[in-house]
Image 1 (cartoon, one colour):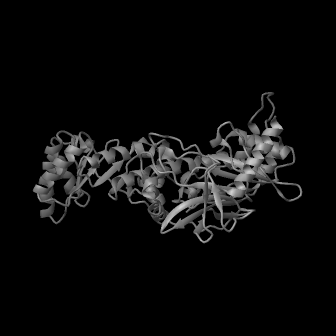
Image 2 (image 1 turned 180 degrees about the horizontal axis):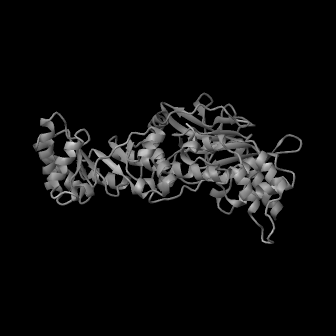
Image 3 (image 1 turned 180 degrees about the vertical axis):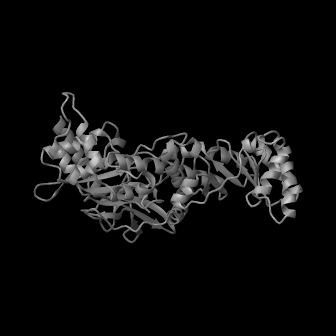
Length: 490
């Protein structure tokens, strides 16, 4: 599937910030545009004050990179941009360079659905520095949002403890693209279906939905509305019962459900969309059971999130299916992940690597140098620690990891510990080499990943901090480089 063709049908190479193009122009003008560089995309803190994050958006990334080129219309537009002197911002030679540009970077990434942690590279881009620079904004735009929504969905699915979660957020999403990307990410994060029909067609996600309050209000009585709906769509009857009086609505649903059963069909359930959901679901369950519908589902919606779901379950709510909208697709309590994209290595004139580090007064904002890979260690059927290491130097037989936020914290790892490296090749010098999994395979991967982490990591309040550290030699090099740069500054 070509997402660009299906969703946009246009070049997306201008989906960037102007300063990316001004830097690319600077590289070209100074004769450095083809210098080989390495950049990493990562984030600094888990969203939602949580203990884990679900990587998402990689299929969009692959599609973007596979179609990365500047069209004639793009070049014409860029030629019209003026500097503050009223003259063209970019000279024609640079525009010709962009028009002839062929994507030639090598890209590695963590597979979608993988559980990831702060400071770990989710994507590594290696190639001509001008190309690497031009990819910063679009990659962050794609990965930041979808990772955020997939993580929120995973948290909600953990809160329901295996009960079905449906994504109903299209009407509250940030635009058409936000709605589609959210439906996809929410499904990967664990949602069972979406109300978004276009997302269903594009991504192969199951779609669910019945009727709204307007259907009921368009009839003289609630009973008439339910009966008519049952007549026209007997195989899709989940009745929205809270238009007037919720419990009376449940009783009418039972009445219509009995008629459905006489005609060879079965009422699927009811939906609650307002009021005290704990109390109403308990009372509704009694009415349904006494009416002969013990298997009828109770669907709940109304601005739910993982914390409200947890509270409702603690109150004994009899809800089977959870419809989540606004607080999922908008990542309501944290609307941005805060991912970043930093240069970490630059090829020297003699062919070696010059490693780069960004300094800051805040430890969390100091970047990691090198051509980085992430190694995940496993023991007794559970992930135990992640190590960020420089791929050029490799890993000692018995490695140690150093906490990048606290260099006094060290953890030794036995030489025979089982491991896997997370970053996998996507593109080799511009050529796609990755077999893109189906969305159901990605979703299953996310489910299995979460199972392999200690329950404390998945806790909502004060989660356990999963060990992630720099390989000791890399850590030592980083701090030597920091001291050197600060000394030069002084």
